[in-house]
Length: 361
Image 1: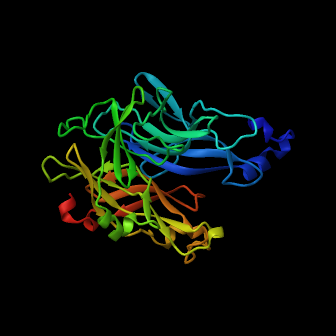
Image 2: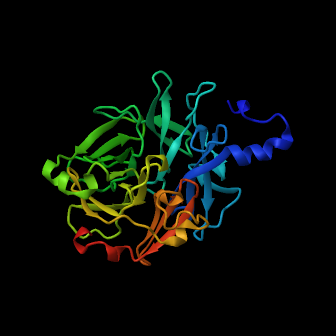
């Protein structure tokens, strides 16, 4: 399908790449075994110079050292096989000539931290059917070269996206949740809080928990009104210190969909991350903490002069795409962020634990 837009003259190839190709949604995870960050980005080709009108997307994987220096042609071994990066992952997808929005989108990478031989898992949204046009969630395995459709239970949506992945520790035996090397969990929705448990082998998912909330509470609580919603965001990462017996607490940075007073032509809503603490006893899940929307400071906007002080231009969208690493001794959380869906940036946040209420950890 790329032949439809590719110029016949080789001299025009560079211009075609500059005007029709881009990347976004950088998500990273620290691979302790190899002492590298693995980063996955969505690389896409778009039609007629309209960047938000993607024709086809691919997943590109890169490796970085602990100082975020890119490792070109760097190889690692896993289960007797050698893999060299950077590379484009081999992901099959449905497509039709003249169509749009094909291939994997919104990748989120995670890895089980308590299994030294674990394979990273990339969760992404992708069109699974042409008639009718439906987007489902998939998990992609970069080493074993597998792509698995996640079959969610309950009422399916025509577009499944923004599932936030996490893992339960292998030795956790509380409640109804199942912890095993073949299980991954997702926040499916933040309101009502809905948690899925899925098999890595075949993608079968069950609804492990769905929150029932009092209507009066939701009306009084700003996070759940019609103009302010919580969606998607990062993976969930287990807090290094767990002081409450039988409970597990995770941090995440979902996105806040807020009404910033823009006209409809400007896109209406703004997006900002919020720091949250999500806790489970193995049966129920709940939010222990929500911060106010986070700005991170002007430094993240770089050369986006229209972003500073103008929430209706490039400053409208500020997203956190992953929690790549937590360093408890230094109290540093490394995250990947993007501005206006146009950048892939890394931010190291200090003293995060001091911002959390003591009773959440």
